[in-house]
Image 1 (cartoon, rainbow, N blue to C red):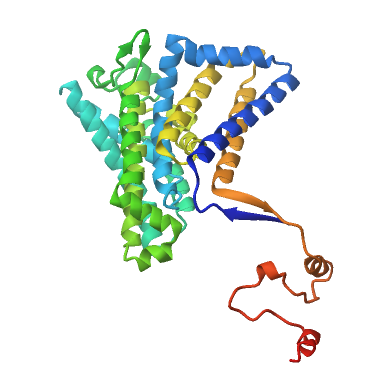
Image 2 (cartoon, one colour):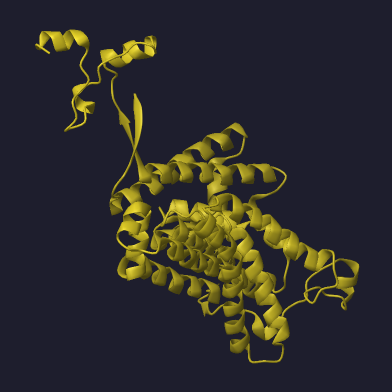
Length: 400
């Protein structure tokens, strides 16, 4: 018999070994797929490393792509660590991008650092508002936050598409020649573009540095603060949390607000470092919100490991765009990404659960063969302090 048991505690080495093992299994499967597709695995891996890590331009692009993945990974981590499944990081990122671009356009002419700070704050607030909807519904009405947050992703996506493609909104460019030919968003002022200081020939985006600061802050919050202790208690048992006097409903809303703020900042980083405008088609195509959930699973929902997982996924995504060609179809890139996704999710499951194997006893085999038959449970499964079940013959033998 196979039985799943939830791990009460997870050691650090387990949280390190299982994700690494998951990636090794993923690359083994990818190697087989590439060989079956008559594509050299070694040249593919060499091209991926060159395009995303060893070249200065490729590494800079990896950092830009990894930034929103890390931030949405932190978004998922904050909620998942409490047992609240916020799948709405994608939509919260959209709303953050909308707010950040709108503020940057409105503050045109202000100093660059003022605009960047305002973009970050506005994006965080927009993400908070969007995450507040599933948070309040979950806390007050016990609705399923997975379904609500997931559906709100589509609502946010349609909303920002409406602003650019189906309306003459403040965000749409209606004056330039390009904007009159095809609907595009207004470009934010050049001084509001997020800087990328150079270290050698590699640019380190401001968004990545902000993501690093938020990663450290998230780790401290979860491990060293009273709020983190409350989150751990509630994740272990909601009943125990209520018995301890914790206000679980308020805690759910607070955690969802923090989670949404992180995703909203990811939207600001995307606008400030990459698109420089509200770009619904582009931001929906990359789907950083869903990639963040993969990064969170890869990092076993530990903020520091999530940062590393986000960098890895950023490198894979950056390399994938350079691999596409006549001998390397775009579908193969998607296959590689989904193999990594499946392996990571499987590994995350093993971090939280252990698999127990146990041979069936004779009574259990008889019960499976004849469900109507009554069998005596094995002694190992009898509950202490309770009178075990005895058949009539057994009672007579004992003098009952």
